[in-house]
Image (cartoon, rainbow over all chains, first blue to last red):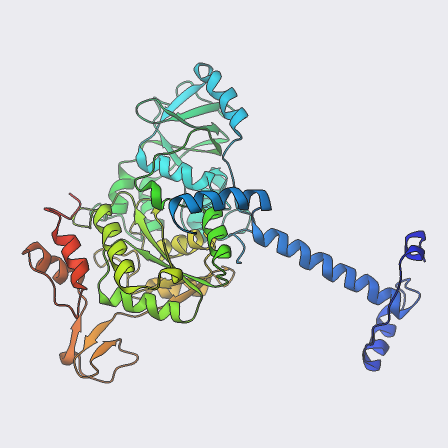
Length: 79
Length: 382
């Protein structure tokens, strides 16, 4: 475990046994020491990808959104 | 919300400080004067309507698009968007130069980084874009009148381009914020260059039934003789929305671009632009963007089979008629009755009736729309 991991608290999440077995198989030769560390890695990857995807889908920042809303109000498109 | 075409909403509108710097040094640049339709292209590139384009196409992109309808970056694009320039205008302009694009009255519009200057064969372009070299085709006629060379390169907007209807001129970032603010996750676009008859209203409302919002997006720009004036189209739609649409479910905004009459290829172009505005569906009707009989009535439907990678989904509609037996608007897929029982929404017949100063019957066109059209002495383009 890294220095950073020592500082965080953990909770338990249950996964089906059959999935845990599949993960054990998948872990072989990867350097992961436990199913938990592998699952943490995968979840971080998935969440980061979803967040990145959401950011790119917006196509505008919050500041831009506020400026645009004012123009849309001026034009009567929104109240 | 759907991602822009190519993944990024392009913004080539320079920050104010950079605009001022360029405008302060304006006399140091060579200039190229362009007409209203090219200024609209620049505006559409700058605000991301034409994403992923960041400027006028270089020769490689142009050739790729002509042959395969894909840019070099492997993103779908239906026809070249390049700047035509005369040899005379190019006398003092070379690759890698930065030039200012201006209006005919010398108003600076954009900075162009000249990346490519190339020759082109107008007949080859006409055949590959329009499927014909017949100069009676309005798109071909315009192409044949273009200047001798094409220029490619990135553009940067330095001055606002005039809007015909500023109150309806929304940029893609604005439509996207608007759709989000209204809580619309799914939006269907309707492309038009005509005032609405009941068939148009029917397909719009049919499309809207399955999504959260309807984006009515008339093309404003150069059209062929005999098409309706832009002002007539806009005022007709304002009247239709006022009287027959739930206001929280519809947005009317203009798409400032010329009609090219490239039929199926233009349907792809219209779909891409509407995806950039934030729409995930587009209504594609019979003979979309067609003219005369250069294209088959459903060519603009078939072409989408070649572009499974487009984000926006087409909703295909066939031609509509009013069935006097069903007593409703139908198409050949949903009505079993003989065509003898059908009243067809023929644009030319509607025009004929309007030209005689009469209102078309109310089962063809809403009386409010007919009144708007008849309030103009001449509602058609010359």
